[in-house]
Amino acid sequence: MATLNLFSQPWQPTISPSFFCCSNSNNNISYAYQNHNIISNNSKFHFFSNSRQFSVLSQFSSHSSKSGSGSSWLQNSSFASGIEYRKRPLYSVFPTKPAQVSSVEDLYQFICSGPLLDKIGLTQEQVAESIDNWLLYGRYLCRLFQLNELYLTEPQKARIYHYYVPVFLWCEQQIAEHQSKFKDGEEIPPLVIGFSAPQGCGKTTLVFALDYLFEVIGRKSATVSIDDFYLTAEGQTKLREANPGNALLEYRGNAGSHDLALSVETLTALTKMTREGVKMKLPRYDKSAFSGRGDRADPSTWPEVEGPLKVVLFEGWMLGFKPLPVEAVKDVDPQLEIVNKNLEAYYDAWDKYIKSWIVIKIKDPNCVFQWRLQAEIGMREAGNPGMTDEEVRDFVSRYLPAYYAYLPTLYSEGPNGSDPQRLLTIEIDEGRNPILAS
Image 1 (cartoon, one colour):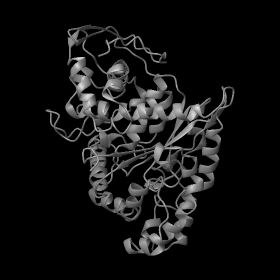
Image 2 (spheres, one colour):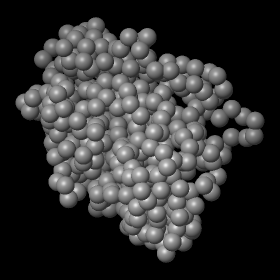
Image 3 (cartoon, rainbow, N blue to C red):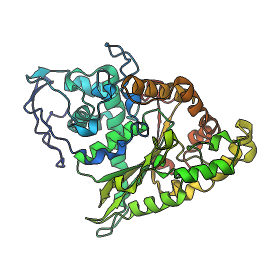
């Protein structure tokens, strides 16, 4: 077992870990927190610029029991009360006196029991050798989500050490493999990692956590969502008028409701951000515009990223969907026929840019309704605008046909054009935590 030495990392993080000191006695960790007033760099938190568009509240529901047995893993978090976290430092409130927590050995055993370890190709011996990094990454995530790492509930500990940290390590492996393909002196384009997962299952929060970890270890990253490429309000109106009576194209969401030219322009530009000082603005969408019908956000509000980028995190509910034979989609819902035809253009606009894939797998698409309902209830209870239960049911119903049509192929064959060697499939339960594949 490696000795706990959090200052022996091979890299120098941009946010210093000097707010703590540690000692290791009889395999027990004792932390003396010296400084609570950590100022986090909020420059990257533009990703969550709209509470309806990028809602992390579904992950931060306050409905879990105090024992930690409920589905929410971030109980008592200030996120649940609707605090606008981009306007305040993101750090946990730690005790001022040294406190003793579970041993390194206990945490090591917990990490090794996780369902993703084999999937990401790590042995228990490798975990033991890198335990310092696991602890440091876990500490950063506790700070990000305002958790007290000394008193994590089981769901919180599972989310961090069975999910977010393993996925981050897998992404690091993918970046290393990607960079190894280039010769010394060559400009290396950023690796584009795609995250395909149904709405409400936590992909946005996962990307948020990964983006933060990349920042603190000094890797420049950019985050984009398929939502950023929706048609303007005017374009959406034209789409609706061109497809009268088709409920799947009445609102944004399904294939056909995106500005594919904008996505090609954006993704192409991102892959060319290989030099210091190169900057570009990332498009964003305002779902609250036009009474919730949405519109592209004013370009003056778009966030700016600067090169050289090492990784681009691209997430969306329908990334990697493959067009199917017409009869197959008509058997699910006749309205899918035009959506299926529209999907033919999406590989060249989205999927071909993605070199590594993370697919979050669910057993039943009906979970999407429950997750979305939890998110809306959380927003309403926090005093923010939220859909009614019936509005949620109507909203989700417009996506379910695509889930039933395309998810089986996504799960059995992988995303459109993906390399099986660069694909991580994560099956999650109703609590949004990884489980062993069935």
